[in-house]
Image 1 (cartoon, rainbow, N blue to C red):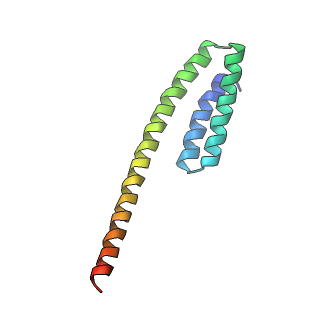
Image 2: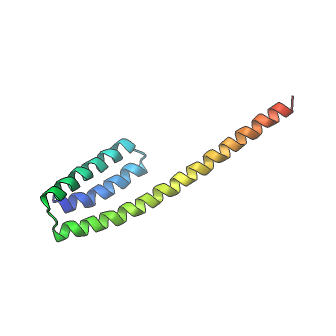
Image 3: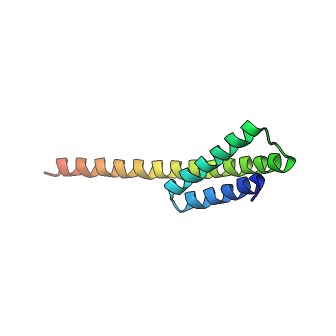
Length: 97
């Protein structure tokens, strides 16, 4: 597998890991990509295929980042609602005695 192919497949593997809430695998994939990018940078091996794959990966990662941000905001709102409901329940219990 070429470096360009690895970058492309890692983007989809990362998306799958995140969608399955497998954060350990997601971190592993990110670490693999960072090691590859460090090697490529050191060797100055910037082929046109690799540059195109990097652009595609960046665009894919930006979409994934946006989806993660949306999910984070949704979870934050749900947590806020639970906390508010809990406080209301506590107030009701205190005042109903």
